[in-house]
Length: 316
Picture 1 (cartoon, helix red, strand yellow):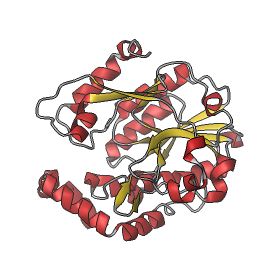
Picture 2 (cartoon, helix red, strand yellow):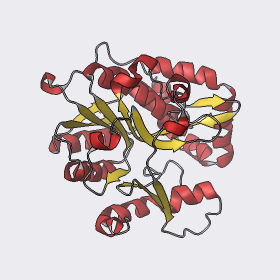
Picture 3 (tube, rainbow, N blue to C red):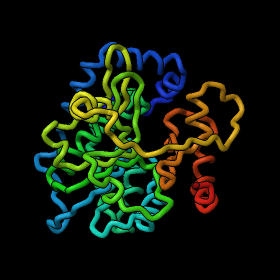
Picture 4 (cartoon, one colour):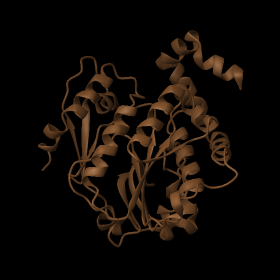
């Protein structure tokens, strides 16, 4: 794989991939050969471990919070701080699953977790490599990372409840995750691009015993040319067995709090200038790692993180 590493470091490849045409071409290949890419990613999600990760001290934890990190220690640092401050469940464990593609960033996030007494687990590089330069685009890398995490971390530890979080999600009020789940089998932000629906895995809660027999799959899914992002395959595996009219979903409120020049497309505005509140309790920074390549996004993210009290005042 040395030639792959050299390819990733070349300025020529970086410049080529920065063009929208090149990214569109890569995405076209993935759409056209989506089944093949899914099979490859599912295969890769089983590598890197001969044995599951046991829980520390063999402790029985009833609630596990899983955060997938990606090339941003600033977000992880703030999330760890606010989770410790606002998650009120007595018996929970917060685990950082590192899907970062940069070795230096992995070291920084690992050091940060050690300093804060948070368990750190690194995704095998072969899995995380899929995210490099977004070659393996449209959520395939994230879905692959979640499948790997479910197989080697969540299922072996057998918690009563587990929650999946993106690294740019922050609680801003006291919240009990298990109380919020209540008697539901799952709870999350709904994505419904077509008749098929699924939960966005950036903020979703699951009762493990209720879904384990369905063999969860967090990979993206194409249904009749309609793309369901990471977590989309859960529709076929789990959610199609439920009546959507009987499912509870959290509230969401999206605000545009910045006016970046040159942003005209709705998707670019969403990823560049907006924040989102979930249940009027959680802040979603949206595009925290700037995978959408929005100019000035890194500065915007830092500004929000440095002004959390002002953001809390915006909650209803």
